[in-house]
Image 1 (cartoon, rainbow, N blue to C red):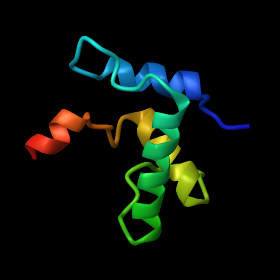
Image 2 (tube, rainbow, N blue to C red):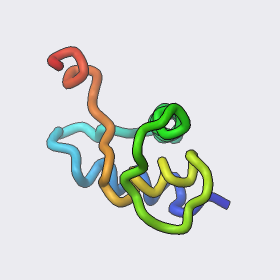
Image 3 (cartoon, rainbow, N blue to C red):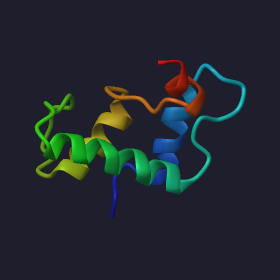
Image 4 (cartoon, rainbow, N blue to C red):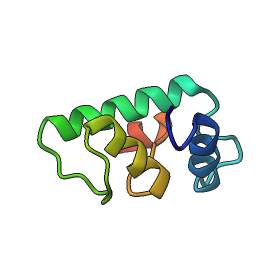
Length: 80
């Protein structure tokens, strides 16, 4: 079982969003974001979450939950 759950991750991510609409509104968005971050970790990016996670996916989930990395909207991505 994944801990934190998808619902908990969605709540944490949407609380930090500076938008009227939720940034994440589906499990698919959570899966895509964690998979992308896990790939970055596998490719050599330094993990930002400290803990007992032993694989890239668990580390990515923990980073999202702790707010160490954040999901940006399509609009923010286009602006950068």
